[in-house]
Image 1 (cartoon, one colour):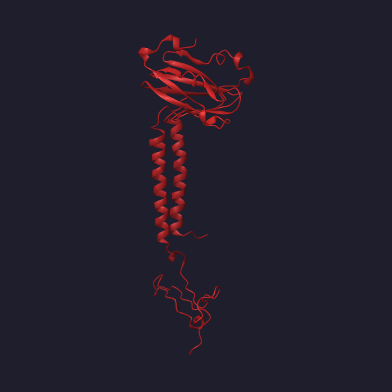
Image 2 (cartoon, chains in turn brown, red):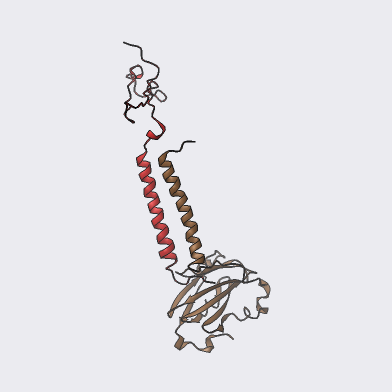
Length: 171
Length: 90
C-alpha cells in the first residue's frame, strides 16, 4: 500500500499525541504522585452507620503528627460535618477524608481544587490531601442526588495552627 | 472539425511538470442551456502521480489543529491540573 507523504506526517503526529498523553498520565502517577480514588476505604452497611466507631460521630480525628482523619457522612441534602458546622482542619497538615453516604450517591468536591470523589452508599471513599495556609474552601455535591441537590453544600475551614485546639477534634 | 477523443489523458512524463495538466474544454458538452445536474463534462481527464497530489492547505490545517491540541494539553495538565490546589496524594 502506498501512503502519501503528507499522510505519513499526520499519522506520525497522531501517534505522537497518543504516546504523549500516556506518558503524561504515567508521569502524573509516578513523578507527581497523583493517586486515583480506589476501593481501599472498604465497605460499610449504609443502614448501620451509627454503629461504626468513627462514622457514628463524624468529624476530625487526629492520627499522628500533623496527620488527621476526617469522617464525613453525606445525605440528602447535607454533609455531616460540613453543612451545619464547617469541617475544621489545622493548617499545614495532611488530611485523609473518609466519605460515605447513607442514602443515595452523592459527590464530595472541595471547590476549585483537584480533590473530589463520589460518596456511594455502602462504600467508603478515602482521599488524602495536604492543606497549606489557613483559608476556607467551599464544599459541594457534584453528583445529582435529588430535588435539592443544588443546595447541598458546605465548607472547610483551614484553621491556623496557633488557633487549633483539641476541642476541634472529635476524639 | 476533428473528432474529439472520448478522454484526453495527460500523463505526467519526465518532460511535463507535475500539476500543469491544463484541462482542455470539451466543446461537445458546452451549450447554452446552463448547468444541468449530472451533465458535467466527461471528456476531460487529468492524471497525476500518487505523490503529485499536494494538499498543502490540509497539511497546514492539521498542523494548526495539532498545535492547538498540544498547547491545550500542556496548559490543562501541567499548569491547571498539576498547579491546582489540594491534589489527591493518597
